[in-house]
Length: 81
Image (cartoon, rainbow, N blue to C red; front, side, top):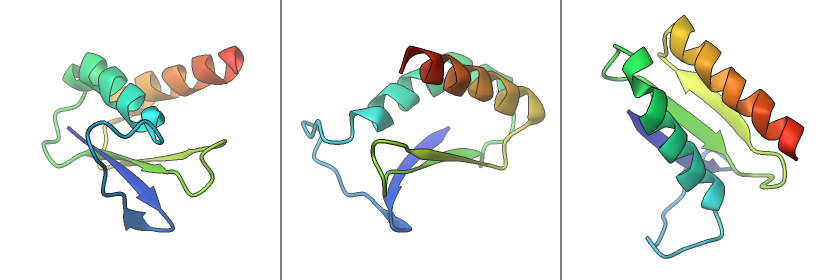
């Protein structure tokens, strides 16, 4: 499953050693852990990093099961913040 970072609607071009958008790497790791919940091969997670202090997540073509698991992650992350 693809995880895409965007700023102002444009895909972020990143250097693999770039730490500015660590949130994208964290989400990629989490998605890898729950991707078995998703059967749609074209599903993806888009992270809008226009405001990095409050990223917005868009789940495109994802199943309800995957959305539920991902929302659990987002809620847990908010509790920690």
